[in-house]
Image 1: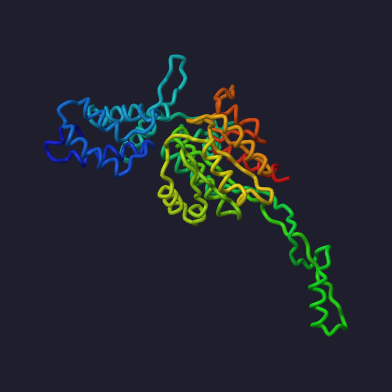
Image 2: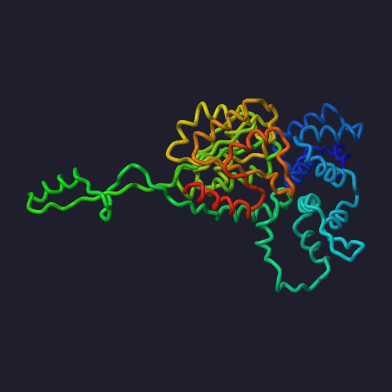
Length: 393
């Protein structure tokens, strides 16, 4: 697979295969980008290797963090004649000078998985040294995966993590409502129902009809950031929110980047693939910029009265990096906090030790939240359940 394949009329096919490799590493490259890239190559030509490189990069990349993977994949796929040998080397651990085994970085692992066929992956695993380990005081692969960062997971680990997330549940206790409902063991006597029952019994016997306060789950309103800096995390959060939405009632999910979009109806579909496909079609600003203040203002004006009644809890998922920071962000957060019973902020940046709220957006939002929690792996999502349970008390 080289750039000279244009002479044989297979340029479009090779560009398609290259895009498939990038998708395997986690870079979202759709068919529309492949078609546009092929058309641009027909106009730019293949006379210069640099033009070919930057034409593909301009169509396939939308984030700075993706450049390293793209650069490695491009040089291996289009230029290196020993592609398979180098990919095999990427998958093998290295021995440091102190005799310790160093695992390859996650980006190299994702690239190796995307480039290698399954058969060669098996042979690569067979080439690794057979080392016997004592697992008496070690943790299982499942526990390791629960604590792995979503950003560093390989494609196979992401698929396994999605299956684990689909089984997560939020054991949130129900709260007592003011509305009364018939209950044979209730403490309150329903006089109207009792009189109707006495008429049917001919007034000889008056059976007492009782009722009690209804109990329901409090509303849960989720505001999820889908900007470029949150892309990998927000996709995993949507799997988590799909499981929560189908497990309990009154869960409302809205996503925001540069605009606010309500995706509650799509997440209620039982099939997760169809649900997320509907979300992708409904959201137009995926992996773009961030306007937290404007999105909160729109929520407070359009959705607050409809969704934040009956002791609703708001779960905000964002890194707090606002592109258009203004004085209005703190005011909108204060209004949101006053409208809800509790505001819980999940921030992936808390995965770093010694995190300090230096960004202006984080400093403006932090005084108006009741809980500030990390959200970067499966274990942190499990901790969210206990935070929500305490918030409803």
